[in-house]
Image 1 (cartoon, rainbow, N blue to C red):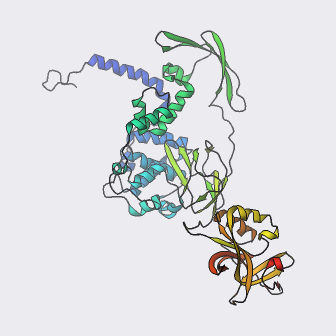
Image 2 (image 1 turned 135 degrees about the vertical axis):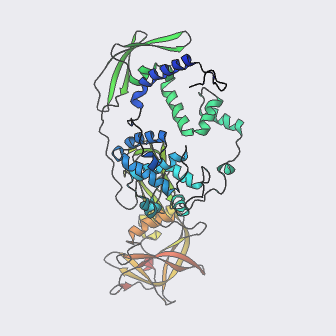
Length: 501
């Protein structure tokens, strides 16, 4: 009612309003395939507190992530995630954060208790980490402290308002950088503002524009549903410029799902290859993450960026790669410090949950600004001619000849010596001292060569210990591999010099 004739009347042109209503009713018929399968309202929202628009979006996200059959569980997890977060006010974008957490919990079969128990090894969605850092502000009553520490993994949260930490922008310079990065943007400052607010969305939009051009000129039915054989349409590309497109036929799909599409453009026959997305192409199955050090995908999605390379040294919680899935981005971090091994999958690969992406070999990283040394006394000395010595030269600097307090024995059947430290100052072993430049890489190889197992000293043939080495009258703390077996029956090398035995 518009209270016609009343002093509070709001003048409305009802016939014109009805024309708009009829227009949108017709338009909606074109877009009905994109509507949610949820056809009726539900009282469940009083329990799970999912906002209406997000309720329908979650259904589509669940299907896209391969957990469409777990939608009821996802709704339950939304309620659980909201309780974990402290029963926050849920409006865009805070409601999306709760939704991302619900999806993450569902995809990884996590309960609220699992989040606390296993949180140290989980790579939470970026939106969740940003929320607990304070990127959306401070919720009423503050953050649940224990959960905040689990999710941030040592990263310091913001103390005040999010805007307080934002640096001022030189708009002239920043806009010039934008123009250089996106030289063919059409709306200038409007495109620039879109990029600043939604950088990933704008980059995808710009890339799509470069590949397909201005697709908004195509009539909506043709754009959404394609043409039927021998159907012809007119596309106005500019004032006074109209092209005629007629669809003729298509070939059978090849093994990659591509069809040859034949059509006429202004009467001239053309042919292009188009991927038929209705064809189920057998996707290559990837190895699964099963062993310690295997870093798998936390959920189904696409690897957008690999942030490390083989041989990189990484701290615990260092970012390894980024995975995207239905508007949700997660940075997967290293569960421990170590060295990156194999990069199994490339950027852009579509992965299933637990697909093996890369490996990390656990190792203790060197302390910053602390020099580490290695004392070698046998077949790894330069004069011994061992090929492995070349690896030492690449990852360490020769300091000079040195000696250590201990005895040297010869294992004749193996052809190498065994060093054992002693309390007798007259026992001396001669060797070479090296300063390590790539300690993790070098020690990982030498540990394997010397059959040293950090978690199993009993079965280690040699143990990498830290000893005092005498170099030019100075004591230097250095690694040395000491023999971990009985020396009974072994011949002592008199003088302790393997090269002079």
